[in-house]
Length: 163
Image 1 (cartoon, rainbow, N blue to C red):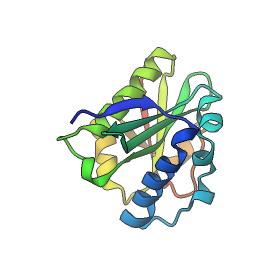
Image 2: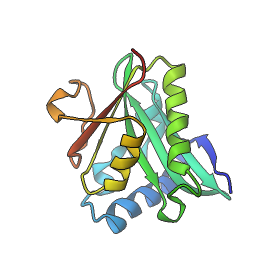
Image 3: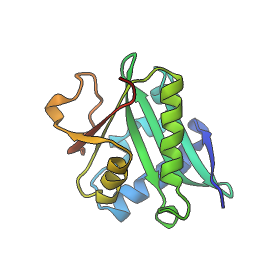
Image 4: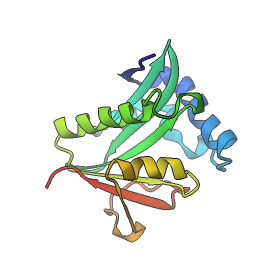
C-alpha cells in the first residue's frame, strides 16, 4: 500500500485535528488542546500565506500522516505537525520518510536553506528519525529569533540544507 501524499488545506481540517489530537493526547499524554493549536483551524492562512505548506499522507482515502512547513523568513523554515498514525509507522510503510522527503524537495525548490524543528523529549522515536535524517540537536537559545516556538517544545533541531 503506497501512500498518496498531497497538499492539504482547510477542507481536511477535521481529519487533521482528529489525527493530531489523538496522537498528542491519547497516545503520548501531552496536555495540549485544539485551543493551543489554532493553526489547525485555518491551515490555508496559517501555513500557505507566507510560503509554507501542509501535506497529508492518505491510504485508501484515510489520512494517516501529516507534515507542515512554516516559513519564517526568506531562507528559513520550521517543520510542524509531523504525525503518523501508529498503525502506519515504521519501515513497512515509510510514511514519515516520504512526508519528510516531500517537504525537503519543497524546501530545495523554494530556496529554503535552513530547517528547524521543535519537539518534546518523550517523542524519542521521532527524535531518532530526525537524527537519522541529519538533523542536529541545538539549544533553544541558538534558535533564530523568528522561530515559532510551541509552548510544549523542549528539544530543538536544525538541518542545514545548503552551504
